[in-house]
Amino acid sequence: MGKCELCGRPAAELARTGRRIWLGCPHCHRTWNASIEDRRLATNDNAAHDATPAHPRVSVLRGYLIAVLTVVLALLVRMLLHPFLGDASPFLLFTPAVAITALYGGLGPGVVATALSTSFGVHFVLASTGELAVEKWDRVILFAVVGAVITTSSALLRRSRRQLAASLWREQKARATAEAADHAKDDFLALVSHELRTPMTVLLGWIAPLRRDRLSPAAAEHAIDAIERNARMLNRLIDDVLDRSRIATDTLRLDPQVISLDTVVLAAVDQMRGKIGAAGLDLHVAVSRDDIVIVGDSIRLQQVFTNLLSNAIKFTPEDGHVSVATTVAEGEARVIVADTGSGISAEFLPHVFDAFLQDRHTLQQSSRGLGLGLSISRYLIERHGGTITATSEGRGRGSAFTVSLPLAPHRGDGGARVDNSSTEAGTIH
Image 1 (tube, rainbow, N blue to C red):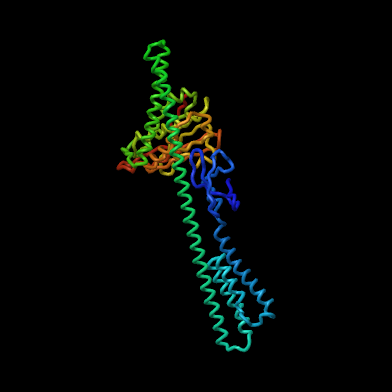
Image 2: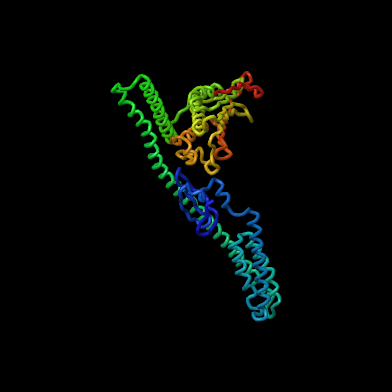
């Protein structure tokens, strides 16, 4: 957890990119950024919670305690100085006591301090001689009015300071977010250039030998396979960029229909079956015997499950295990894609669905990508009225992604019914 160098209190995360993290101190409002590789400064979404003040009840009790102690201290000082001051200015020391309490304790403690000071001050006023009773009570009432004015003014000042601090914190967070977005764009452009250059180099490298017809039939077949594989990679990268552009401009359209969720999931599994076999992974599929009926765009949902399976394949070593299951729970359809791969670090887990962000530790074990697949998947699932969550016990301990979607509305025959007690399971090697 990062700490502020000025006040030493815990810092809160303002923004982050794939390489840097922006931190700020909610107390002294200092902001700074550092490399995300510095594990001491890496933080998570709970940092703001750690940096919040104590429980409200504790703060209130502290304020009233300040009121009592301050007034009692003023009373003791007044009693000690009474032989020297006599009856002059009985409320002289109670006025600053009220001001201090109201400034640091708030409105409630300020009212308490005013009431206590008035009560104690009456003793000195009434004990004085040589004044009419009416004049004595005028001084008591005047002090009460002055205390009320001080308390109200201090409360307004405290409120203004809180509002100013909140506005400054929002401005700092907005500025950090803007800086992070600017850095993310630069990182993204560099990443796109790198990712596009790699398959393009392979394509150009094989085209020249094919054009000169200097390859044997086996080598030519290998070249064609390499060209096709890298062309598909280029096509997917371009599709991700275009989808992200459509999401940013709100022009991505869906074609919702009543569909079978199990059919969509099995279509995604069939699409990725070749890659799963080539990676040497075990795949376990469990779907309900009765169709789970939802309303959605089958093509876009298949894209989501394909992305999840692709990630599982990418980050799971050979002889690992990948599982896909569909079920109905708590009145909604669920699809769980789990693996025994490299897992997700606790600090990166809250950001796993953020666009352009990738866990640099897991990237060391796998080929890179644009970091758009999961953010696009989250957008598509949310457009379907559902949610997608990720869980992991840490690095090297696998991960699981759960997609929840609303069931189709009930039809005249009773709607979509799912028998959760029976499933069809299969293992593919």
